[in-house]
Image (cartoon, rainbow, N blue to C red; front, side, top):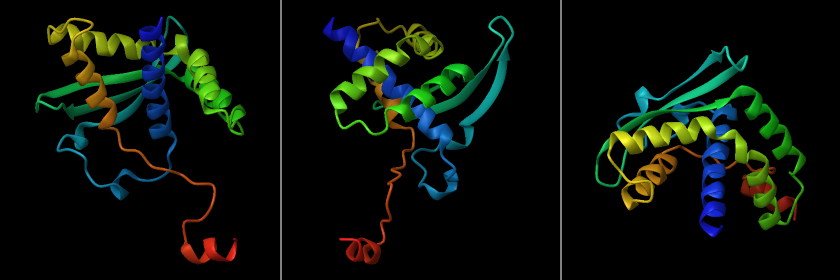
Length: 165
């Protein structure tokens, strides 16, 4: 039960990072390059005709801790992204972070199937067992390679901060 919950929380972090990355209006050129493979990373929308839904696909190329290069397409259904985004915004004023993460994890639990499939394909192509440290490192290195930005609800200008105290 504990491992399953940790797995769900980790994969929620993957989805949250992916969603945050897609939502940002900041151009990637403002961030320092994290690796030499950035030029191959792209975001596309395709349509799944069986589900009648668009798929947001983000191609990732990264280097793991052993300098192996990996590539995959992290995908989510657009409707799942929109539902998750709406739910996350409804939780914005929560100060109970443990409960917040639990609620978000539970809400997004069934929305990560396309991401699970991509990581599982990488696992099989690299001949990693599902519980191997190498497979865990592959996933963690992928997530850690995603550029992040902290958006604050207030100015970072020291003069503004000093006058608002």
